[in-house]
Length: 212
Image 1 (cartoon, rainbow, N blue to C red):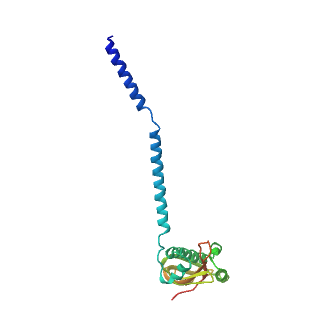
Image 2 (image 1 turned 30 degrees about the vertical axis):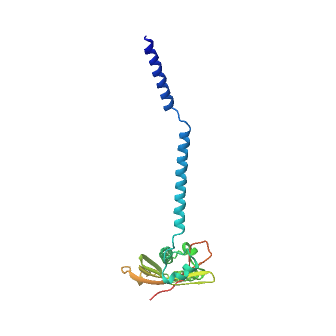
Image 3 (image 1 turned 120 degrees about the horizontal axis):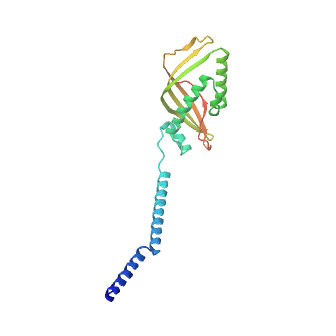
């Protein structure tokens, strides 16, 4: 073979070998560069998350009605909309349980005096041989109409307007009160209370009464 061709073939092989070596090797500087990029991205995400948390913590509380203002002053975390949603649920649950004579399921939500009054009413109903049928249609309106704070205890009077089908029957199943085919608009005013310092978010029913 021509010596010149051999020389150029050797040079070409050397060049190809160097190219393969360079392309198949990471210098370590590139690895550091990638690591730094990942760390910078992680720090950026952490900073953004922290800003979101701070903005969320600094978000002003939702406004409350005039009748609930004293509750907000006593507890800056008081959320009127959230409270009324819970009051609605409690009202429906307690009304249905009372009609069914199931006071055990609602005992944790009742003050001792309210529980005692409910228990007496249920016992009198059973003694008379009456039973109560109730169909809860829905709540039309619920609002705080008055509130107060005394000796570290917050109290809220809530007015409810609900649609119910209420029937009382005797031992023979005859209707003695109400109409199974009529929906009545029922108005109640219930008082709920909670200690300002309590870690328990639940409110207790401490008073019941009708509304005009």
